[in-house]
Image 1 (tube, rainbow, N blue to C red):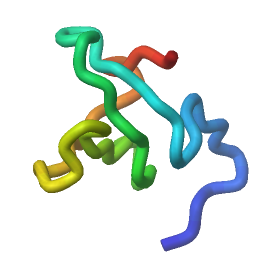
Image 2 (spheres, rainbow, N blue to C red):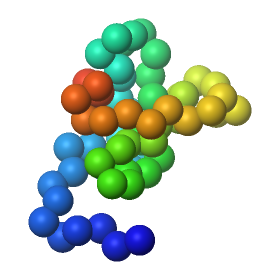
Image 3 (spheres, rainbow, N blue to C red):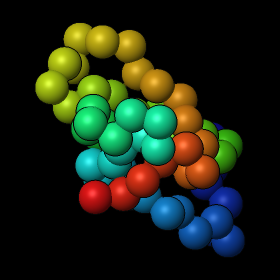
Length: 60
C-alpha cells in the first residue's frame, strides 16, 4: 500500500501518544493506514493493538 505524498501525519511511527478518553495509558504508534493510527500498549506489548483516528489521540 502506498502512502499518499500529500498526507501530513500528525504522529510518526514510534511516537508516544495517549487517548483523550484515558490519558493515563501510554501507547506507541506502530503504523498508519488509511487515516487510522494503530497503537500498541507501551507497558503491555502482548495486548491487542488499538486502531484510533488522530481526533482520539493526544501527543506527549
